[in-house]
Image (tube, rainbow, N blue to C red; front, side, top):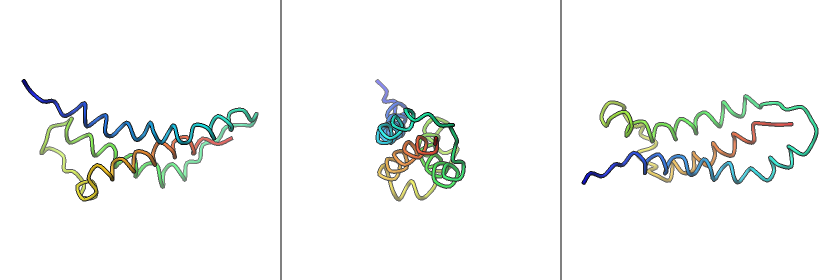
Length: 101
């Protein structure tokens, strides 16, 4: 019997993103009810969202591409799963927060 770590790693990285989306969802629903034109806040997404997405993705890629091929950034190694969790929640929240009316 073999142990496959990839599904667990993907769950640990994606679940906080879903939690971040759910934290912002009530305000997002209230914004949907307003009848205004949609915009996307690129600055907030690039400055906050992309670095947090990078941390989330770099916690998954080394396990899916083969260990040893891609180096894990030191910030993920030092922070451990806590860093990935915080970055995932931030990315999920900023993703919905960047959509504005």
